[in-house]
Image 1 (cartoon, rainbow, N blue to C red):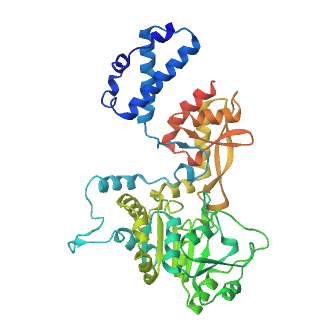
Image 2: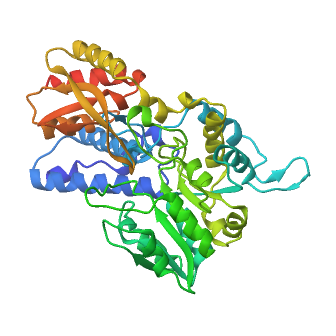
Image 3: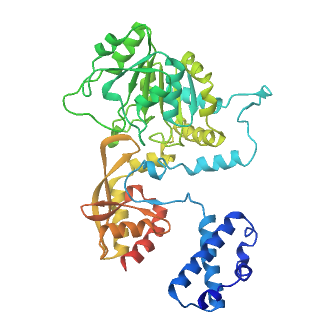
Length: 452
């Protein structure tokens, strides 16, 4: 067919791709070029007539260029979080302090003493860079870090209870996301779960009755991503510790979020990690990228005898963190140590006053015009932290000829993507999770979409 004869030689197209000349010989580039030529042949076969060879050369080259740019563009990129979920798991949870990134840059672009004892002139342990600070902050005897809290739980259970029984309340068999459930992690650890109590009520005598010669650990799991209300009962931390001491069985508390400073001033009731240590829990674990406001990590702290046993487990090497995580975590922990929680974005975001958010929302709505209105909202902590705890906030509701789903998609597909929430049939921008310097990026995006 005549239209197919106008398809240019590959070399003619390659001459148009000078921007990519260094990678055109790579297999992935060849596959993209072949795919575009195949697509062009199919289109010309169906159309029956086509453009000139010169036009086709330009068209094919443009399509190849677009696909190569998309292929080379990083997949991981910033988004504007206008959802009001502060610790949004799908958006990276805790936002890191600028100072932490500067410290990371300084450490990672040069050699470092990550596993070298400078004073002794010999190999050292990477734990020391955060271990001492964690001991000071928590009042614990020892602490180590692995790549997330699920890994921490797995490692503790495997180290302290493999082959034996772990007693845990039936009401604490939580799922922590993507179908990772406590019973399944426990099974993978090589320990055996012995459930006690009921879904809504477990008493300390249920734990004591279940203790036998195979009992290796008493497990307490903080319900960080759910709440059981109504006719409920749960042993106190003091009762839990007393039983473990009396029966000489180690106690382990999975705290989940791992809060370092009380947030009762904003209505968030989360247990403090240091309180568990002070009460006498033998070993605890919690996340680094939730209420702590740091990088993804699983922190293990408690009695030196137990922490050392966990550290000696061969699995520790497979689950340990690298110098990048250590650098960021060290910076965040030292913010707490010097009493500078305001340097941590998560803390700052959670404590931003209603009045400040209202002023920002009003100013933004005025700049958008009649298609935006100020609205009082409730933000959430998110990330499996403080469920059913809402923080009063302010935002902007958008009015558009587009449906709410169409408007949500348009904002999500913008550059950068804007992640919103739909509430009461309206698309909402919650200003608690929008950084001030993002407003100038957000304004033209919203304005352009609302014109459609």
